Length: 171
Image 1 (cartoon, one colour):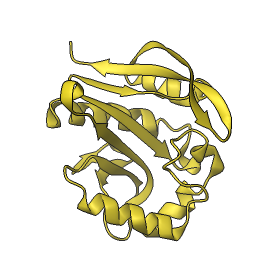
Image 2 (image 1 turned 120 degrees about the horizontal axis):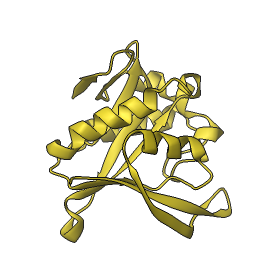
Image 3 (image 1 turned 135 degrees about the vertical axis):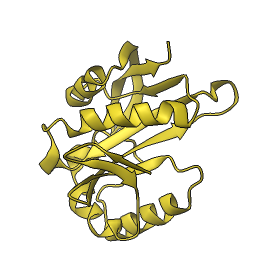
Image 4 (image 1 turned 180 degrees about the horizontal axis):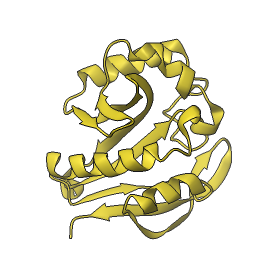
């Protein structure tokens, strides 16, 4: 998969991306806003394991965000099944040197436009931590609607915290 977004691209992960991943992913500020399955510290071994996983995953639901061909972040879906089979959760992260440039907002818009028809979805949602105002702004700018606050719904770094439900739905 490849989506040209002008100053950056969204593409399939590939062999070689594991070389750059620790440089961008090994950042406590990133980890503090992601699920615990995203490791910290983020080691070269973690990068190799991730690339091996995504290269073998079917369907392909996780993609690299690249600047000048270098993988500097990621975006992906967790597809649901059963009664939620037309629903998916989106997650994303971006290396700190690229924060504040509008990359993740445009990536989320482009990825949402790709994912809705590709996976026959009616709804894509995200649950950022309430304290993560940057991600909340990204979701709002990308057309996601706030549905509510999920009080005391997560534990991160030993703290019980609130999450906010955002969703993009087909009319």
